[in-house]
Amino acid sequence: MCGIVGAVAHTPVNQLLYDGLLLLQHRGQDAAGIATSEGQVFHVWKGPGYVRDVFRTRNMRELNGNSGIGHCRYPTAGSAFSDLESQPFYVNSPFGITLGHNGNLTNSEALKRELFQLDFRHVNTNSDSEVLLNVLALELERAAQHHRLDPNAIFKAVAGVHRRCRGAYAVVAMIAGYGMLAFRDPYGIRPLVVGANEAMGGTEYLVASESVALEPLGFSVLRDVAPGEAIFVGQAGDFHSRQCAEISSLNPCIFEYVYLARPDSVMDGASVYESRLKMGGELARKIRTIREAQDIDVVIPIPDSSRPSALELANTLGLKYREGFVKNRYIGRTFIMPGQAMRKKSVRHKLNPIGMEFADKVVLLVDDSIVRGTTSREIVSMAREAGARKVYFASASPPVRFPNVYGIDMPNQRELVATGRNEAEIAREIGADLLIYQDLDALKSAVRATNPALQEFEASCFDGKYITGDITADYLSQLAHERDEQRGESEDLLDDVKRPVAVD
Image (cartoon, rainbow, N blue to C red; front, side, top):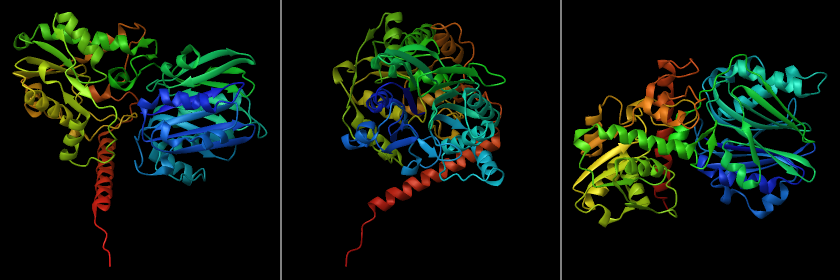
């Protein structure tokens, strides 16, 4: 996942974009970038790290212009260590274009070959976002009339992107001398919302991954960008929109509601916070039917995203809710964790138990999900060491059994703790006395209850059904191979860091 933001205003947007990225920091902490447009000229600054670390006053002063885009990166494709992967990306032909992308193209390798062999366009990184940028540039060139663009030509180009690109993509882009373009894939997998603000010079527009980036900046939410829809805002603030996909349907990623999005966001008409409350209610109803789970003394969330679910679960069952873990918010990030020992150390530095909440109690720990199982195992161990008599573990989402290919960087399928194991076996693997998973239908019902218009979801990491219809066993095998290679590169890098330097 990544965070994207774009703005067209009547005053400089550098601070607006910076503040928007801060509000979307939870969507990506590996790199950040801003590109502003001043007439025909782009000003770009980007680099690795948190938003607050990438930008200095001198950088902000150079980001002139009343329109621009921003991006905070979470690696999903390409190398996690290359500064070249930072976004926004830029091409200067046939039009100057900068682009930021949230999601993942599932046919990026095929597109890259086509761009090189048939279209004579060069892609300089391993990022699928650069591939998408070059496809957009090519389609704009084909749609332009006498080397000029208008909204009709721009929307025709986006339609061409939809025909060629597969996978998930929410996009913001600036076209030099024209304005801001934003569009969403035909399945609406990754989120995108547009807002407006009435200013002295007229209406200003802001698009972002989540509504939480709009309202604190003074923008009212107009609506979500529809699946397959494109929005174009000219430099003068003229607003245009069009459905550009031949076939579209709304299938938002359900993992956004489970974990990725901020709880104070509303996405596709569904409150993330309310969805998580309802997940807790659904889980409570399941626990009521489990005979072995009727001796719970206290419900304790794993900070932070599981708190609403744990609170509603406790209230529904009439149980005590307690904060049993204190999270260290100031610990430095461990960028390379190649082995279990490093992961264990990271978890124990991040969370510390409050002994009185565990001593001689039957404890129900609630987390949003269980992926690899390493963190869950350490948390269960910490609860036992703090004196818990029994430790039950509940997940607000179903077992994660399949890789996500649409923009969430999950481990290989064989590394997922739920692969090839039933609930009892997973419980033994993480050291819990009892493990309760949310049912997938119940999870969907929880989100749908906050917006009944949401009928379908992208839930492939739970059910293995890939909505784009192009994911094969060979594709997943190749993806696993690439992740293995990246892990090897990470471990090699760690060895290089640790290796002593010979001194004469």
